[in-house]
Length: 493
Image (tube, rainbow, N blue to C red; front, side, top):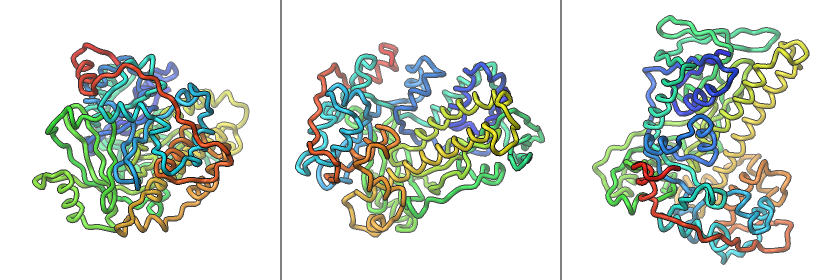
């Protein structure tokens, strides 16, 4: 099978690196436009990122060194709660199972938590302590399920690292050119791509096409992508960003993302080895650029800096998967940076893609007319699109939940969130007690732990208050020393 991937950002490169490992893939044409640059301020990942990356790169220590990676235990929410700040940490079934508790039911039971009890006094106690003291549980093979972590990294350096992997593969041809047109064909109302035409007049004909051209605008007019706007649900639409130099690296090199409330949005702080990535996601409908820049630089305590600024539109692709093509990464949609949904959704899409392509490879063996709308192949595509839509729906509801449950109401931006309506969010809130509603234990704990951390109670249908989960004392070391040891070759991940 010949696969054509358009886009050399993180999503496209991850897809290329994973697919080159598949026996049914004989050739990959990877097209990167010289006219489209990556932002490259920093990336914050979730647990599925490392799981996917290790499927094509077995030396994760090289990733840490080449991508300026640093540990992320979760997102530290500053200023969102009426009480203490809290760490929205990664969770696994093993954390509750070791206490003899069902993970999903424990999440639901958090609705019975007394408002006087701090969330980390019963859940994630040791992890919260370690993170606050910049400690890393370094014996990952033994304790990874109890103390899981992911990564921050420099997006530009990660892309360069991934390109190196692609350049060393005999299956991958990297083409530096720009797609100017996409030729579609229709057979019995089934839409598929027949070929791409490049700026150099070269044509690329493949068996399957992957659009990962990002939010540059190219995907909208070349690949005929249609989006559903989510701007009435997620109000942020613009961001300032810049890299910061360390003033005191050991003090600032914390193993978590900081999400700090601001007057008209929130500021992220993501340490990488060489510098700190930071920015301010805000709503241009509520504040001017000048006022945001002033507030941002005052918060940084350096008014001499000149931040970059970008627009973004919360939206979701109406059709992620097609007959012989799909859209991944920002081409499939974008919400906003809060809690790092971008790479999480992208990594999940790449995983789904491998299932899709494996089925596509065998489509001619499925009984029936391939172009019949009722054919099993089309049923598979429809299910993949439904799954993709559901992922975006959940993340959209989860991000909205962060805003709606924040205690701030001091500006119009924060007050306007109280009147935002989203039917799926309302559905989840009405079913906080119902284990059949939640797609998996991780989704449940994302929602339930956020509410409990903000001392919000709900009808759980359970009588007992949640028990305090016990955590083992385990070997730890300083985060800075841990990463330095990896970079110096004294330790492996």
